[in-house]
Image (tube, rainbow, N blue to C red):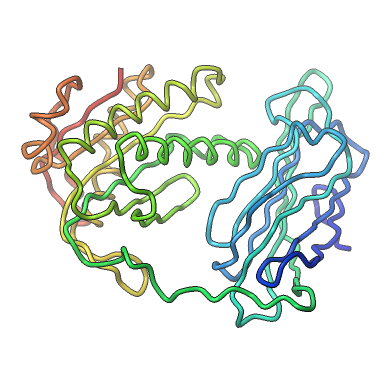
Length: 342
């Protein structure tokens, strides 16, 4: 047992047999009865990024109020309760997940952290973030053979591809439980928008970073079909997600598209388009455009070449304004076009 400084006790994790290539992990927690807790967020981060989790559950008296999220790279979490709500949560619970891992390992190390949201007299809400994570070593049960992971993906080939980068606006305003839910919504919105556009998800290469996502889309796409439907998919999905959220929880995105020849490297993708799409996404003009239109759910920026090739003739329902993106410190200059959702 290890004391977390929120204050709480974490028990485990422990491993239990399921199948030769899958085992169950259980991790218990107990909150100290010194506060009125309305939410708890349990985060597990394995040092081995190939750990895959499925069938995440949370066993507690009020398990119906639990939510789970797989963030990729051996990171996943559970939320109990509502950080914006008033209903108390149970003081004890047990998190559960089915895990797959590389056959070459006989033990997995990582960290676990428990954050909470408390409600005090006068409806004063406080998000209490653990300043330290608890280290653990998890040994799979006897008989576990592990998973043989391929050394690469067949779709990771050099080609001219469409690149999409997106960020959440003002992500730092969220406490940990709120951030988990925001990430869940963010990932789901982008995945559904790609599905609406007819993009084969098995051919998408994703790089995720908490408040952002970078996607290399499959080669050979008909951009005259995919780009308009991506725009419509973003508009539809964000409107749906935000329809019953408070202004604080509302999801607003900055989105950038670019196209160019890219190739897989030892630590990600290389190519001018992979750099340019992030320069556009992080540009001051895009940030100011979204800040200046409070009613917009997203701001989209595309380079001039993509606008002239595809957007001008095929995204007929959206208005775009021409801007000059300049990042002197990076030696970057490019004409681009911005669209703000209505």
